[in-house]
Length: 277
Image (cartoon, rainbow, N blue to C red; front, side, top):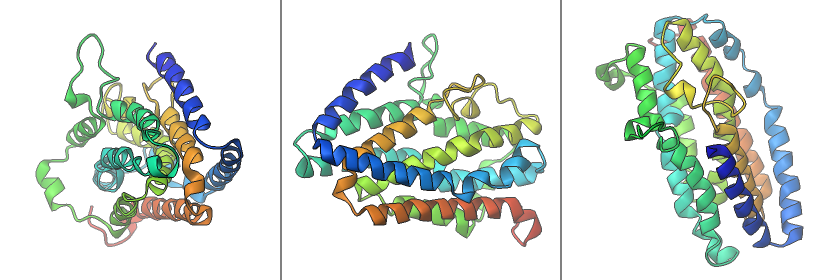
């Protein structure tokens, strides 16, 4: 019921977005966005060797603890910040397209934000702020035996800091931020199942909580909508792509993938270098 209702709302909003720009711009933008998506799909990030290691439970508890602290810093902690900034920066559309069109963009982004805040996960009246995805992730850290002091003492790698800085640097540009959020969603879909399996191999219950609400809509063991939110973001980029330099956006998408690839390579090899676990 929830997904079907929201899909109808998506259809209505998509129609309004398409009507707000010329048919020529929509077709041209669609072609360029598909090109960006296809380039990203071919990136080595999405075939990274750590995925198999995580799936097979090859990593030790300290190793998985380290990864979760780094992953929190690089994306989980700031994801809702970025979504809210995208909602705010949608105001840029009013001057460049038509007054009030920002509301259609904000509507689609709000579907993602509703999920992130846990408002779509409540069953039988148990809606609570503790269902927010960041709160659920914090519970994973507790289940992995990570204390607040461990978090305070953790020295973040350059790789996780680079990812955080790169996303935060896009906060002033609506199209750039939408693009990076779409790539981030794609990364989440690609790596969440593997992270879930790594945690399960360590005896942590993953039948509920963070790893139940991340992945794809089609997965039977999850109540996830990341793929729908990713599609919404690509749609919003299609709507606004002609307002920015397409080569710059393509390069930014590849740069962000490169940062993620470097991050996962670092996470894979931390036991083989001088990084303290």
